[in-house]
Length: 112
Image (cartoon, rainbow, N blue to C red; front, side):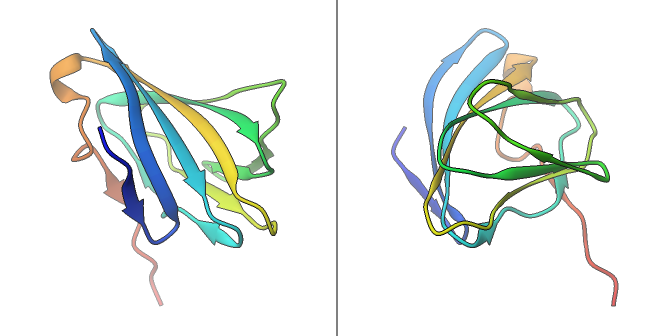
């Protein structure tokens, strides 16, 4: 798959197999993804370069190259890069193959 641009950076699918998908996320400097969760998949985030944090439910976790972060099904999460350099993350989805799509996303709406 080709690179898909987003306001926060870009992603591309590196590999898809039976029950899993591997993506590269690049979060631009001073950018973040939306707060989101997925009904049909869990995710593991693995930082490969740069610096980033991920909010999982209400906990802010620092990503590191030594330890991945597991995000269970139906868990609110958000990737954040507050630095001056891009953050490169390998994201692994696990779930039923027919349900591993970008449409499996629920974004949290901010109430003002």
